[in-house]
Amino acid sequence: MRVIECPHCKRQYTIQEIYMPNYLLGYAKDIVRNSDGVIEAFDGVEQDLHEQFTCEECNTTFKVKANIEFETEIVEDESFNDDYSTTIYKDRIKLEE
Image 1: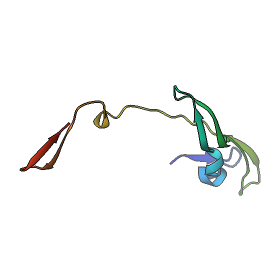
Image 2: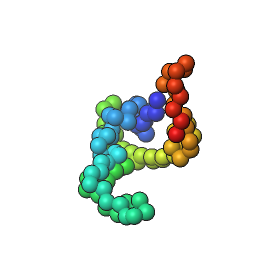
Image 3: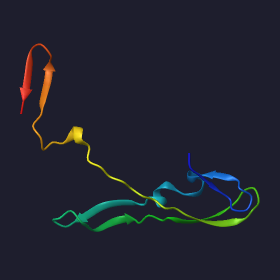
Image 4: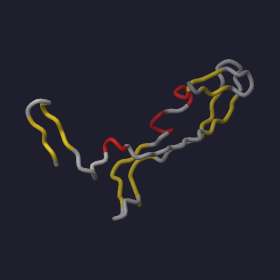
């Protein structure tokens, strides 16, 4: 589990205690993309990675900045570009596409 520590007294906090999920990640609706799939606009709230928090133990106010990274990879098992077959009953029928 990742925690956030008060820089003064080292009291630990969960991310959820400091950040509100809808504002940390933001939210989007009515997303407009061009023909290449690039997002041009959306309605909603941009992510807010900065927060100011006052420690409940020592009353020190400190700033927190989140660094969020995303990684992607292709799931080979679910590639719908390749031919595949489905076995419905092992001893009765096999559908191929």
